[in-house]
Every structure is written in C-alpha cells, then in structure tokens.
Image (cartoon, rainbow, N blue to C red; front, side, top):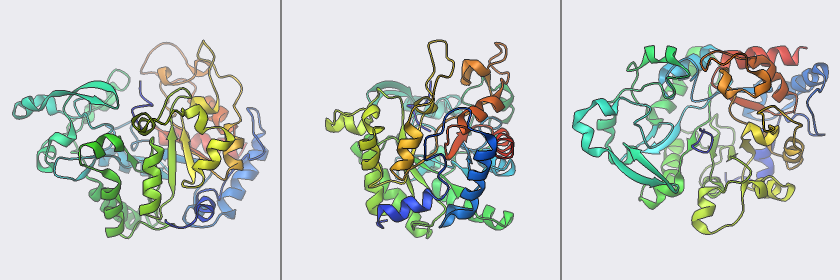
Amino acid sequence: MGTQESDERTGGTGRRALLGAAVLGAGGAVLGLSGTARAADARRGVQGGRGGLKGLPVPTVIGHRGASGYRPEHTFGAYELALDMGADIVEAGDLVPTRDGHLVCRHEPEIGGTTDVAEHPEFADRRRTKLLDGVSTTGWFTEDFALAELKTLRATERIPANRPHNTLYNGRWDIPTFEEVLRWQDEQTRKRGKQVWIYPELKHPTYFRGLGLATEERLARLLRAHGKDKKHSPVIIQSFEPTSIQRMNKLVGNPLAVLLSGAKTRPWDFVESGDPRTVADLITPQGLEEIATYAQGIGPTLDLIVPKDSAGRLTRPTTLVADAHRAGLILHPYTMRNENPFLPADFRRGTDPDAYGDAFGAFRAYFATGIDGVFTDQPDTGVLARDAFVNS
C-alpha cells in the first residue's frame, strides 16, 4: 500500500463479474451482522462466482507486502511466509523503476528506510532531496540506481520500533524485481499445487512519468511477456491514481482496483491535472459508478469503511460497502495490523507499541461490514479471524 496510508480491454461488466463473484452485504451490512448470515454469504461467495477468483475464500485475506508483520516487507521471505500462513493473495510488489527501466518491489522509491543503502559508502553521493508528490523527501531513490547496483543492497525492517523481532532478518534478502516475482509466482503455484495470486501496486505513476520512466507500459509489457495480462490472469493491479488505472485498463485485461486514502485527500494525478475532486467525491454513488467503468474494485482505507471518533474508537459504518457493491465493485480495504498503535482504540491492550491488542475483535468488526477482503500484515491472524467469523 501507498504513501497515503502511512504514517482488458474487455468490458467493465465482465471484469466486475470476475472480481465481484463473492460480493457480500450488498444490502448494506452494519456492525453486528450475525455470524450465521455472514457465513452463509461467504460460502455462497466461494461457490457461486465465475472466473479465476471464484475459489478464493471470502473475506479474502491479502498478505500486505507479504507477511510483513514477521519479515522485512517486499522480500521473498515475506512473500513465501504469507503463503505458508494461508494468505489467499500476496501483495507482491509496490512497483518502482530503476534508472535503467526495471520494475522493483519497494514500499517507496526512497529506500533509506527499507534497505541498508546508508551503510554503503559507495552510494553516499546518491543521497538527495526530492519533491515526491508535493512532499520534500530526503534519501536514496530507486530511479538513481541501476538494477545491478540495487542488487548489492539488502532489505531491512521499515518500522523497527514496532517490530524489533523483524530486525533479526535484516540483510537476508535482496530487492526483488517484478519479473522475478512473476517467475516466483509460477514456481510457487507448481510447488503448492494451487494458483498463487499477486496484487502489485503502481507507485507514484505520475511522478515517474514525469521522469521519463512510465511504469504502466513497463508493467503491461512484463505481464504480456509472461502471459498474465488477461481477464482471468492471477494478477490484480492497483494504484492510488485513478488515471493510472484508466491507462492500465487500455493496456491489459487484468482486474483493476483504485486505492483510496483519506476522504479529504486528492489523488496526485488529480493535483497535477487540476482536477478538483477529492476522495470524498470518488466514494459518492456517482463517483463509484464512474470508477466501475474502468475498474472492478476499490481499496479504501479502513477509516472510509468505519470512521473513528476523536478518541480513536470505531463509530458506525458508512454506506461505502453498500454503495460500492451496488456499483458492482468489490472492496479490499487496508491495512489490518496486530500491534496496538495500528488498532482502533477499542481493541488496544496496554501501551506497548510492539504488543498485540485484540486483533481478532477488530477483524470481526470490519468483516461484519460486508467487505470482500482485507490487507493485513499478519495473514495467519487474518485467516484465523476469517474462519472464526464465517463459522460463528
């Protein structure tokens, strides 16, 4: 998922059917929907769909940057662990380009916080300050490195204060390219005897297009080369920039999702083009109908599903789930994490930033709204929570 979170050419109807096979709660679920009713809906979702996603459990558990609650994010260690833990889809790839045009998997183009680049004196002169989507950002950027140079770096834990245990794995994995991920996906599918799904995100596409490193065309070429650019291909593409998803809609047949940050924010492509709309405009029934002309799903922040009050406690759900389902869109909100600081206040236990709160309670509350899946850093918790919810 993106910075906003932190701190087929075929017709739209057909692709919405692919991703919307397991739509739940279209009548407008609220907190407190009975487990029995939701379990029945979930079973219908698994059995009643069409296309490649029909066999996935609902709600779908998506490993956020892999199993990033246990391993440094966007490493093959994190990706494989997510599969071992039962994730239905792995978000394998926040995609950013290198100087020589390769797509690599990093949370952001700035890699000072996710690699050991600062420990490499040969790259000291690459540190600089740039304006990234309007934000002054200092560090080392993937677009200033050739792939061979990036491959000399090793991944590190991004939030060590919350996940000191993950620092044990600092330095064990390099930065994967997306082409490596596509080959890994095939290998894991053969090894595990079932189709592995991935959910790459195009990061800052307007920024990179301005640098002459357009990422949509690069991604489309890779998908075509690997035969994964079709309606039923096991690759869902997402971006916080709606025009990037519109561009991908013309380039490939994959299922597509628009990511949505806070209601008052504006996608950066809108800022650059002078489009005055905010996320609040995109989540109106009219806005959702427009999204449904070129995408099959949305990835809203959880706060757009259930807002919090001034004390950080959950309030009543919005109508977004019902509105999106009426438009034929699925919802895969982000991001569930087990640690106290990331949970709604209702579900925190103590004040230790590394301690787990009542994550199962939080999962249950969000699942009750009728969401179709969720991104989570701890896929094992998500799978257990989903199983408890649909069988209650």
